[in-house]
Image 1 (cartoon, rainbow, N blue to C red):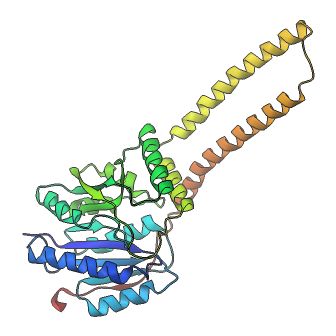
Image 2 (cartoon, rainbow, N blue to C red; image 1 turned 30 degrees about the vertical axis):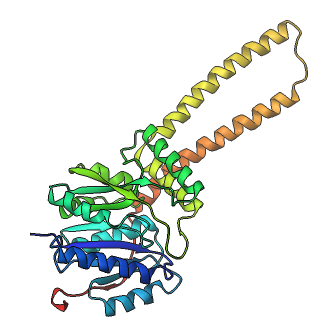
Image 3 (cartoon, rainbow, N blue to C red; image 1 turned 120 degrees about the horizontal axis):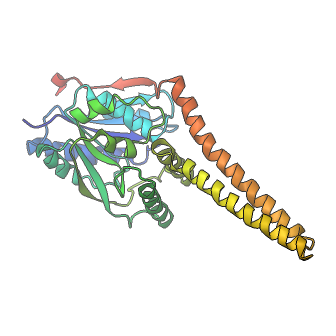
Length: 320
C-alpha cells in the first residue's frame, strides 16, 4: 500500500515565491498520486514562521482553493529549524512519511520520487545530498563547505553537503518526537536516530523569485548551534591552548632569566603590549566558548515550549 505523504515546507516572508511553489508542489503531488506512489490523502503543509509580509494570507487562500494544501501558522518567528520541527510533528499524526523542503524549491523536487522509492525499499530516512551547489552564491557555497568539513573534524555525526531536504518515515518521526531539546540542529539530530538511511542526489536550482532569508548571520548562528549542540571539542581545544600557553610562558621565563643574567634585557614595551592583548583575546574567546555551553544549559533547563501554533488549517480526508 502506498504511503500517505506530507510535504512540509517552512515559509518566512515568501510571498513572492509561494504561488509558484504551490503550483509546482501540487503538480508533483498529483503526479505521485496518479502513479500510485502516495495515497490521495497526501498533503502539502506550508508552515508560516511568523512572516511579516502576506505569506500567511496567501497560504490561507491556497488552502481554500486547493484540496492538497494545508497551512500551519506559528505565533511568532521561531527560526527555520523549529518551524520544520513544528511542521513534522503536526504532520506526524496523519502521515506515513514526511518530506521537508524549503519553499523556494531550490532543492530538486524530482528527487522526492526517488526518496519514495527508497522508502518502499525499507529505508526510514532518506537524505537529499547536494550534487552541485553552483546555483548558490560563492560566499554561501564556500562557507557551507567549510562548515561541513569543520563538523566532520569535530566528530559530529552529520551528512556531508546535506541541509534540510529529507524524507522521514512515521517510525523515524515517532523517535524524533522524543527529543525535547530547545536548541534544535536537525542535521545533527536526525542521524542520531539510528534508523536505516540512505541518500539521493540533490541538484540545487536558482530561486524563481524573492531572495534567500538565510543571511550570513543566520548561517553563522546555525553553525554555532550545530557545533555546541553535539560536541564538547571546543572546550577540549581551550584546554590544549592553555597547555600551549603554559609551555610558552615557561620558555619566556627562561628567556627573561637568561637575559637578566647576561645583561641583555632592553625595554620591551611593544612585545609586552602585544603579549597582553594576545593573551587577553584568548581568555575572552575561551570565556565566550564556555559561555555558549552554559547558555544552552540555561535554555534547556527552563523547558519552555519551542513554539506556539496560532492556526492550523487542515483538510479532512472526506473533503477530496
